[in-house]
Amino acid sequence: MRKSLDEAIKWLKKKGELAESKGQPSTAIATASRKPTGTKKVFEIHVGKCKSLRRGDK
Amino acid sequence: MMMPFFSFDFYTFEYRSGTASGDSPVFNTRRAYELDESKELLDYLRDQFLKIDFIDESVDLCATPEANDYIGSVRIPLRDLLTSDRITNNFPIMNEKSMNMGEVEIAIRFYNASVRPEPLSKEFAAEMLNSQVINKQVLTAIAEKLAD
Image (tube, rainbow over all chains, first blue to last red):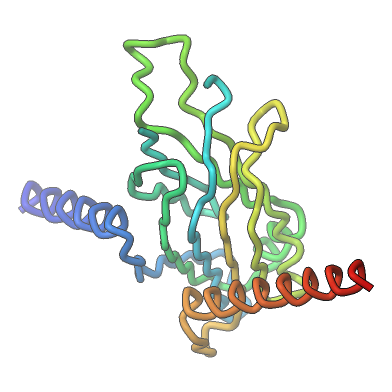
């Protein structure tokens, strides 16, 4: 049971990474809770195109 | 060929993107985190920066230990989200020597979970298009002024 759960998590993580590397936006919503006041907020980030990336050692 | 990816920490979350290829990759990555509004969250937004690190996975650090896989980072002050519900810009990617290592399009929104706005990627594309149109209009106006 434990082993198959670990395998399922691994598969889901791998699937998510593959989808993103193909340029498909991820729609996963994670949640966090710390001393709530009742209102739920959403922090949403979109990272689009990069331009002219280079490394400093080149 | 470069194989860049990015990673960031936000509040209690961590994220690492998939690996792209080339020096001008399109990530088109959207992440949304649902949070309970709290004093801790507001303090975090007021005091912290969102730091997004860009790394080149093509660098073999074992074969070439002197190489550096770090491209650079974007730092975005989160306090701007306390006065505006969104941040949209082309941000410079700066390395540890404050050198510009490229740029990246980033849009951030902070809103009530009960509201279901348009997907950020669509809005982002529209805003970027608008800013390009405005840039063109400004350039045309300057050119016309100079031609007079």
